[in-house]
Length: 92
Image 1 (cartoon, rainbow, N blue to C red):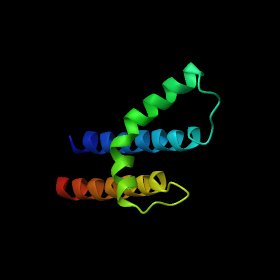
Image 2 (cartoon, one colour):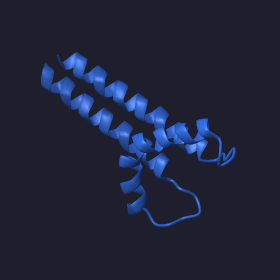
Image 3 (tube, helix red, strand yellow):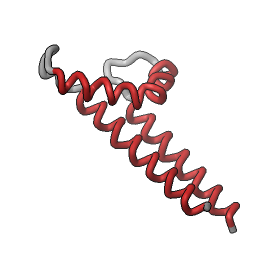
Image 4 (cartoon, rainbow, N blue to C red):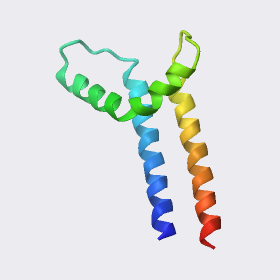
C-alpha cells in the first residue's frame, strides 16, 4: 500500500511540474486573441495550476519577472521528497 501511495505522489509531482512548466512557456507567447486552441490550452493550464501559483504570487513582492512557477516547482519537489521519505520510514 505504501508503494502505491509513493508512486501516486511521484506521479502527481511530475504532472504538476509539466503543467507549471507548460503554463510558464505558453505565457511567453501570444499567437493572437482569436486563436481558439491556444486559449483552450491556456485556460486548462491556468485552471490546473492557479491553486498553487496564485498564493505564491501573492506572497512574493511584485517584480518584473514572475518567479512563482520556479518557486512552486521547488516547493512541490521539496514536499514530495519530505512526504516520500516520511512514508518510506513509517512503512518499515
